[in-house]
Each structure stands twice: as structure tokens, then as C-alpha cells.
Length: 161
Image (cartoon, rainbow, N blue to C red; front, top):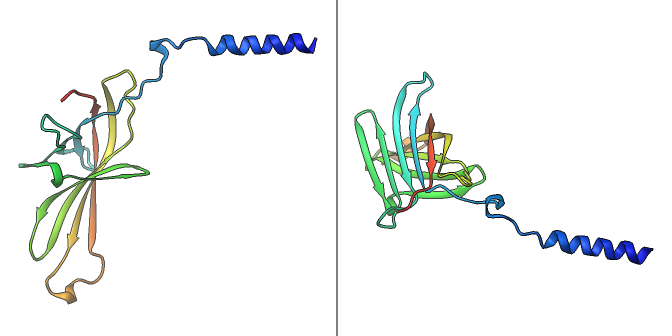
């Protein structure tokens, strides 16, 4: 009797293992490579448009930053990325000065799995960092960075370049 139950279990195990997974049931992992966002301040007013692609027709990443009447375009090494626990930080320098520091904008990209879709809605944050610096050493004391955040809403897409 023990032998019969063992054989039945063994046969059942083989039968279940042999069931093919249909393509429609397979878990698809698709990562976006194009992100388009509109930025809003705390009052809900539109303040920025951000576009970022991890690659392009040239093979280099592209980042477009538009705030008020200013439009800045970045490519390749001008775009810095760091993977963290909270997502990918994508940073560009939006203002450079020789003697007072610089200003950067960082886009926080959450992890997104598009699955079988080519687009998903995404909400995230943009962080503007003002980095204080002075050529006079006495002025380089205290907090050297200040932050402003904006709420970003938009899409993450998978496109062919």
C-alpha cells in the first residue's frame, strides 16, 4: 500500500512538472526606457517638464529639463545615474558658477515593471539641490546644500530606438 501511494505521488509530480506554461501565462519582465513627466509645485501649479530616456538612436541617454522659459538638454556623460534602494537617481547640473557653487536637478525613478504593457503611469519626485560654495574659506561653513522638491506625474514607456 505504501508503494502504491508513493508511485501515485511520483506519477502526479511528473505529470504536474510536464505541464507547459502558455506564453500568455508567462511572467513578462519589461523595464521602461523612456520617462515623460510634468512637474507640479505644492499648490498644484505646473512648473516643469522632464523627459528622460535611458538610451536613444545614438545609444546615449538623453535628458530634457524645461522649467518656465528655460529648456536644457543633456546627453551621455552629462547625465549621472545611481541605483539605490528607493529607485534610480538621475542627476544633471542645471546651473554652473565658478565661485558660488552649482545647482543640480535629480529625478527619482521608481522601479517599474511594464509586464505585457508598453506604458504605465508613474508618480515620483524631482529634487533641485543648490550646492553652496565660496572662494572665501570663511563662507564655506554650515549647511552647504539646500533642497526643493516638486511632484512629478507622467508615464514610463518601453520604446524601440
